Each structure stands twice: as structure tokens, then as C-alpha cells.
Length: 346
Ligand code: AOF
Ligand code: ZN
Image 1 (tube, rainbow, N blue to C red):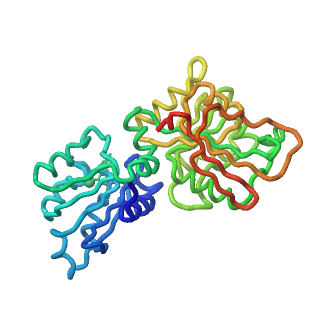
Image 2: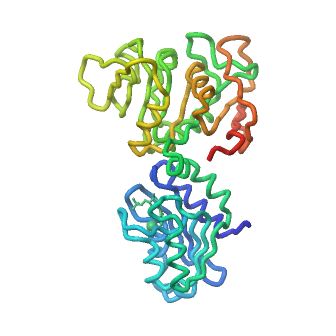
Image 3: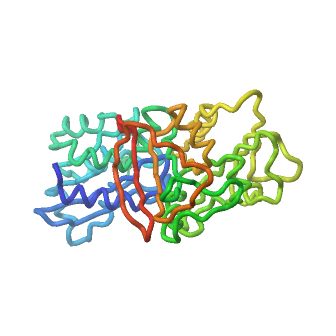
């Protein structure tokens, strides 16, 4: 069931992308007789929730309308005292008679209790309005809460003839518009991971400078100490985890995790989960992507395909079977396709 007001909530929610994780992105609007009199969203982790910002935005001359209005929220209002008081109590205090919700909050501290409390107080509550769109928007949060693991996005750019690049040489595949998009994806992720070869061949900074906003944690595998100190990833400018032996030198933001035995991707994911990181973006290269695909430890694939051919090089990973194409669009001469696994894996 589509609703223009819930649509607006979801658009507002999205403005929090990259700033609220591991919290969900949430938007709220207050509607009186078909007119919006307030709107707000959860803007930053630890700060006011969407409902609070929405109620605060109502102009003084409209405040008397609040007890006759409908509150649309993309997520069930919270029930708990977290960093802010419960939104459910704000709704009751403001005597809002009707609440429309996209998704019930899977957080065990909420989990339907606010819906019950509102109904018990005589508030009319509808749930499930644009629930699929809400669940897609907050797929990382839902996965992180329900599966106790970060949501893993595999990203790669390939030539029209299916190559990631020339062996051992930094190879430009996609155009400048895609580069900016990838920096947005980085900003929206909590961590980015690359393998040793990518760190050495491409020497990426793995920051979000072309977009701005937050830089995610950088993660690199360097089990055999092949990345020398001059590489960007070891510049200590951004929090970084290196899975490999400790290095000499003074590091303030770089942590080393010497591993005993072969590296377990599940250890990395567990460490991310425990440090409240809900989205991991894996940026290659071929070997690392294959490891994630073969172990089934992924949720989404973002494949960028250029219109140009390379004529040879490192082959792009084969797409797993049974994918669902969720979104596709063109940026310059590049095609972007976003897939999930057959179950949606959300
Ligand atoms: C809402 N409205 O806008 C959001 C909600 O640490 P806290 O206090 O910010 O609480 C975070 C939890 O609250 C989060 O895990 C999720 O269950 C819910 N998020 N709830 O009523 C909002 N962002
Ligand atoms: Zn709340």
C-alpha cells in the first residue's frame, strides 16, 4: 500500500544516511486534514529521534492541531529510554490520536511494545504501510539487529568484456560520476575492506573525500607484511584495522590483529558487529570478493560495468546464481546494477 506521506517519511529518513549508523534511518511527518504541519528525521547518532524533530518543527500557530493529526513514522516509535526518552511517550503526551508506521522496530527493546502501548491508550495504529520500502532502506540495521552480523556489500567495477583491471597495474574502469557515487557508498558504510593486492596495486586512500561526511573504518588484510609503510592505507590518517603482523612505528588510529592460522572472515564480521558497525563495503580485489562469495558471507552486490573493453586482465568474479536485481541505473557510460541474493538476504 503506497502512501505519499510515508513516501515523504522515507525520503526524510534517507537524509540521515551515513550519520546515524548503527541506528536505523527514520523519518516522520505530522498530517492534519491532508496537510503536512510538521516533519523531521533522525539526523545524527545519539541525537533526537525523527518523531521529536517532527513535533518540534510544527509552527506555533499550528500546535493546537497536533491532537487532531496523524503521525506517519517510517519505524515504530521507540519504547525505551536510550540516549533520548521514549518517542511513544511523546506521542501520548501530545495526544496524537492516529499513528501510521512502515516497519515495527526489530530492536528487542522496542519490538512491537510501542504499538501495544499506543493501542492500549486508545491511539489508532496502522503498521506495514510501505513496509517493503522501509525494510529495503534500513536493510543494514535489520540485518545487524536480526542476524547479529554486519550487512556485507560486495562492490566491483568491470570492463564490458568482464575484467577488473590489468594484473598488478592500477586500471581505471569507471568514470568520474561513479567515483563520486562510490565515495557516497563509503560514507554510508561503517567499514570498507580490501585485500593486500588492491592496497598495493591501487594504493587507495579508502576515504569519502569526493562526497564528504564520514570516513568509514578501513580494513585491510596483510598477513605477509607485503604493504610497505608508504602506502596510503598505513598512513594512520583514518581508523584502520590491519589483519596481519604488528608493525614498528607509532600508530594512533591503526590497529593490528596478528592472526594465528588462516584468516576467518567470520572473525572480521564478528569484530565489526561487536563494535556496532552495521554495514561493510568490500571493495576487492578478485581474491577477496571470491572468498566472500564462496563463503556465502555477503548480502548485496553492486556491480559497475563500463562500456569500454580491456581485452584481458584479471577476470571479474562470476555473479552467483539466483540473484535478484533490485536497482539499476546509468551514470555516464557506466551501468550500475544492485543485486541481492535470492532470499533478499535482508
Ligand atoms: C525512534 N525514532 O528516529 C529512531 C529510532 O540510542 P538511541 O536512544 O538513539 O536509540 C536507538 C534505537 O532506537 C535504535 O536501535 C532503534 O531501535 C530506535 N531508533 N526510534 O523512535 C527514531 N532512530
Ligand atoms: Zn525514539
